[in-house]
Length: 286
Picture 1 (cartoon, rainbow, N blue to C red):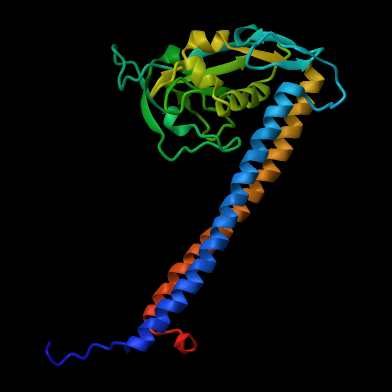
Picture 2 (picture 1 turned 90 degrees about the vertical axis):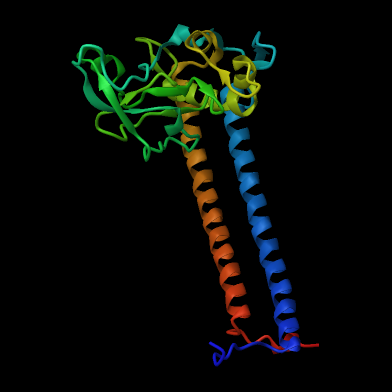
C-alpha cells in the first residue's frame, strides 16, 4: 500500500479548477432557475385559464350576474347554480377489508386516494392493491371510463381524476367518492373535474373540508357542494377548450422539465470531469 502513488494537483491547478467550477455552476444554476420560473409561469397560466373558463365562460362580451356564492362572485347571466347532487350521483367506495365475512369474495384490484394525482387525465396505477369483493359488490364498485373520482380526505382532499379505463377491471376504495352524471343531467363529469380543480387550487375545497392538517370532504359535503352550470353546448365547448389548452401547456412543461434534467446532469458531469482533471482549466490560473 505504501508504494501506491496518488496523483494530486498543484495548488495553482486546484484554484483554477475551483474558479472554473464556480463560474460554470453559477451559470448553469442561473439557467436552471430561469427554467424553473418558466414552469411556475406555465402552471400559473394553466390555473388561471381553468379558473376563468369555469367561472366566466369563453365569451368575453357576455352579461354577468351575481352567483349568490360569496367566494365565487359573478357568473354569466344565463348560467344556473346548483349543488353537485342536483346533477350527479355520488357514492363512497368500498370499505377496506381484505376478506368478506362469508368467504364468497373475489380478489380484485382497487384504487385509493394515493393513486389519484392532478396530472391531466392520467392516473398513477403503480401501487394498485387488491382486496375481496362480494358478488353483489362487483357491479356496484366497478369503475367505468368517464367516472370522476374525488379524494375524500387527507392531504389530497378534493383531488380529482377522470377514470379512463387504465385497467380493464378495477374498483375503488372508500378514500374516494365516485361521481357520475345523472340521466338527463346537463353537467358533465369533465366540467365538474375542472370545477374541482379550480376550487382546490384556490383553497375553497380545503375551507369546506375544514382542513387544518387532514380535512374530510365527506359524501354529504360533496353532494351539497355548489357549482355553476352552463348549458350543455357551451359546457362542452368549455371542456374541449380546456382539454386542448391544458394539453398544450402540459407538453411545454414536460419539455422545460426535460431541459432542466439535462442541465442538472451536465452540471454533475462537469464537476466530476473537472475534479478528475479531464478538463483543461489552465486559463483560469491567475
